[in-house]
Length: 138
Image (tube, rainbow, N blue to C red; front, side, top):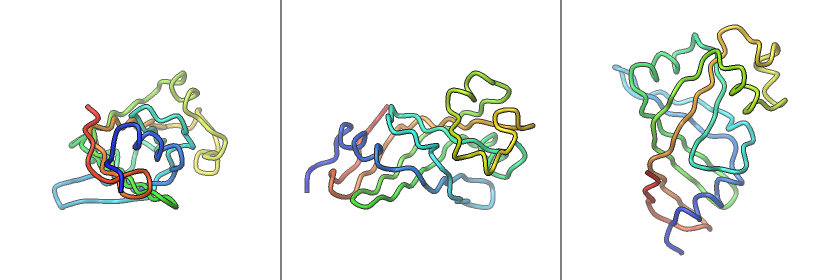
């Protein structure tokens, strides 16, 4: 099995969309499925839309450290990094919007309380055809 590299992580991420986002609060860890908004040119940041009044937003406000676990046909990637919340940034919303997520946000980027979560990966753990091991991304 080849050793994991940053290039191998980038290659693997091109094939991955759905992940589990893990956040932490005072009671432990919470995990939920999230869509990476079909972003295929991965540059180390992942982008997720959310309503602003969710438990994950409250948890990120208290502790921005998150984990993203992706699974594909040939590769599995676990990213650890820091989340940043973007509110009321219509230009940034438009940049990352895809029509696939209108089923959750029928008012699009005009959805009241819409938040864009930016997760900047600091470390990746890769398993599968593209390689295996831990890669520092910071």
